Image 1 (tube, rainbow, N blue to C red):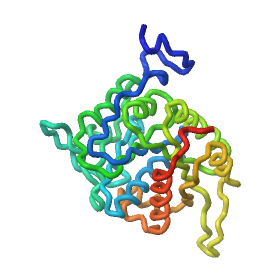
Image 2: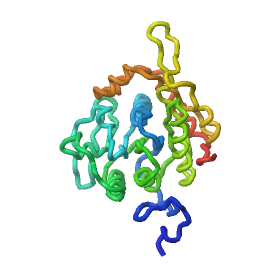
Image 3: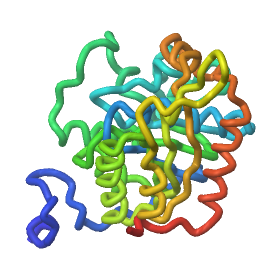
Image 4: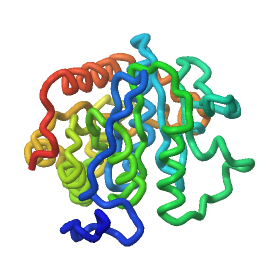
Length: 283
């Protein structure tokens, strides 16, 4: 009998990866930390947060890579201004690096002749590609490999969580109650798969008035404290609506983001969570 036939999970999909299947033996190679970044919901700035986490660690002089697992909506190469092609060797593909901080990047957009063309694939093909992004890529020694997860709780994030030896997951949300509701689904998924919840980053928390400097709740009162209390995880940071950051992302220059103190606080909070005993998806 197959694992899926013997599994009692109601979320097991035909031909897909089953939450009840045992994880493969961890293969860490020369990577010290594996951190997934997800939300369950699109449009909350998950990829931007992934890039900022990578930048924060790279500014500390650490070796950093990003595996862009959002196959149908990849944006990491654009954010970091990565345009160099992949280099194929007998040992595997060598991912290109960002121009300033040498952040290694692997993304489906680096495999396309035209990055604007859609990837119209079913789940199993996407899952196989994500496995190749790890198995067939020569990442080299890294202190951190961040994995930018796609929205949702289906095949692609499931494949990543079961294929890589994750040290934990960072959740990204925005102040709205609707975002909190969807992010909760990702938290429950992490609990099912025994992936530690390292903390949450609230994006678009506020907008600062250019005249008086007052912080305005553009999307209403925040719900992030309810989320952190319910799942027993820390708030790693809050990022405002920042037109400057948006322009840097659009132009592929997010490495120039000037909020050094905010990024350093984010890096410190993540490392503190990793150094402690994060709750494995506790509810």
